Length: 454
Image 1 (cartoon, rainbow, N blue to C red):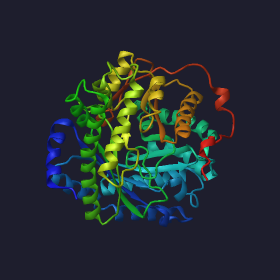
Image 2: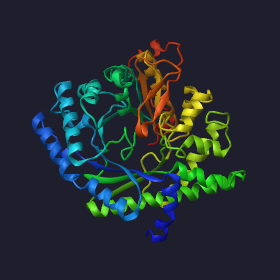
Image 3: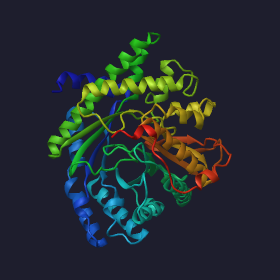
Image 4: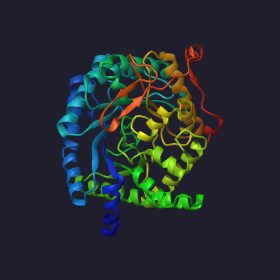
């Protein structure tokens, strides 16, 4: 049971340290909506979402008022549309029609974002899944609240390099269709290796096929809380440092557990997981980079950064696991550039490069996230960056992802303005040497030898 004392203990964290429940995400299965008729399929999808999630926003608001805990977003994830639309979609426009239906349903129930315009192609693509991937630029242009993802690799299957090559082109197209808005449509698309079925965070959320018909997942974020706690043990040993992070993560996760169980009870939908991810915002004092500096670095990116991030990520997970029996999703530390003022400062100071960020992704929770690069970067270069990040995930048996924005018309040193929680990003330089011959090989990179567990 969660006590009233624990609730009261969070007041200062909420008021002074930017603690929030970043999202309540309702996962909804669309498998029972499948039809070979596109009109019937879209009707079924709209009805399923608007019926199942009709009270989601209202319940979230009730919980906010009851406990005075900020719940920043109410979101929905659905079964990957590459599976749902396979029997009905005969063209890219058919998939775009589904995207528009999802967008209408999201608006009808009042959620911020809806994820699941997705395909799972880690070993190969069906013609229909390839069709969905090719439709992504049009779908993101035609909608406001839809997020898209593609899983192109896993430790068990290897990396589908045909999909990686295609996605480099898709990201370029997505940037081009939104060039009048700093290529912001790319913020709503992410490519994964080892994508989890229960991730509540966007843009990568989808409702996995192993999940129940509907589920409640909650994502909690508290970089400011961790930094504040570490300020009180400045100069202490690593043992004290680790214990402080674990205890703080425990408290933060208990807040998520409280909200998740309450939402589950009120909605009559099973509780899935709490995702404790230190997801930063541009707000002062809400930065993962600032935590790394508090641990002892002048800037994120300085020597020792990867070790400090590994320590932080591990202790966050250890503390979170003790606070809830169902910790899942991505849980750990996110290191986006545009959403973290400390990361932005490090890039602008020259302390943090794309290559150092890639090294840091070996030990963080996700990967290369919200990074702006020059708009004239080649599609094959983007595919090469994706392949590198997918390899880290595949070999290390962890989730990795790439959400990258080739900002059309922007060059190194320019700034891309996203606004709100997304902040702004300095355009980072990219290695100019060619990987064309590597990316243009067909087929897939095999699974690593340690994937054979049977």
